[in-house]
Length: 514
Image (cartoon, rainbow, N blue to C red; front, side, top):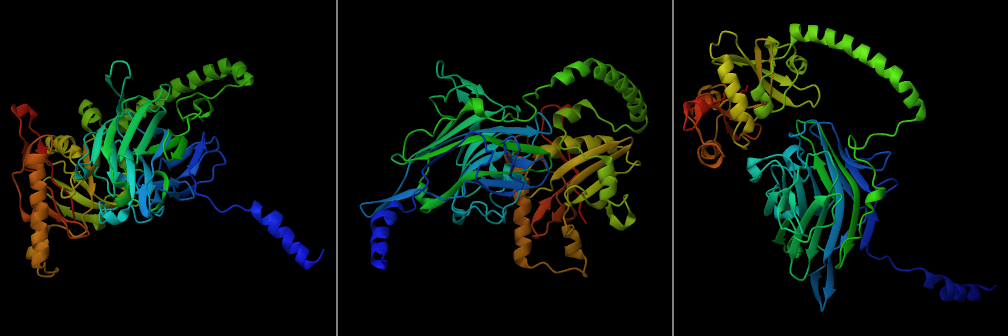
């Protein structure tokens, strides 16, 4: 065959078979075994096909995106117009506690799949303190959130919200669904350790975004949980990635996606095959082999005997070294740290790590062994006659408050007569040291004004914005702590919650710093 004949053959028979690259408009994952996804952080696909966004490690984040960007706009008569889309997914959250968790997870449409600068915890791996809410973020998210954060105006620790470029939702509601027959609203828990289905639909003609959820065994309800107008063209530029983001805080939690489908240009996302979904951990027991059935009676008897011996030994040890727990801790207590972790974090409460001695306790700097986070640990002194009263007040009151200008209480520990509170570490110490110690840096007028505004913001929140009015009675320079950015954070031991009866009044606790 001559060269000319070969060229003619290629032109007529081979080249027509090669089609140009097309946009991705639809896909379905009934489980993620072998799925081609772009993963980062703690995100991984388990051996049984679960997409695991977080693996239980605290203070980390994970992302999973479809590897190819989707075109969200099309040219029509010379103008770019948004395209409709629909997605459905099944998720589940397994937390260390039944009613307390790290932040949840979010379905995300984003210009970029690189969230390396985003923070974990309340930022859900999508933003950070500096860029939260910036229009340059270019992301749309549907959050399934399991914590309350005052900074973002969260309504509860069990809500669904629509976010644009930040974590302050433009619309939100408590998790649940509307029954088709009666129209009654049925509450749902995001932390019930069972799989839940979610649908997100965007109608380009009306710019209406709708979010619907329901238990796995029910069909999609007719009435959505949320509906809001979103000008997609102002958020997403042409192509964007679709996927999921999640993060953990101080509580160990695992966030899973069991299945996912997506479709562009009208119509519902392809239905998910519920029967083919992998089981969510701790919800479906593993099948037992025949050998196990035979050995089970023998093993059970041995286990009962071993447990009886263990209970006796543990009871003796607990009586001798028990950490104190009371009923109020179950209802109000934030995350509890082990004494062992705090002991190692402060190098055995070494004098070298001593930050100062307050009115009723010593304050130590610590580095948590599990996360490496710097904290301040206040060890209430035995000499304090009101130590227990103050301690309980701090855990109950401050543990529920979250504001960017209040020193955050991370957790606590009680062991015998030792009472310990764990706070965010404030590396720049208290304001009075900077004002009166001539060996330290001199604050500029702009810094002083910023600190005053920070303190005012915290007082306004305590007095007016929090669900329970807290009256602050001891605002002074030594109670204003400065973080790494020289932002002021207020801490105090002299405020009380306003209440019609004295028995309900609680003290607002003192903070810790260098």
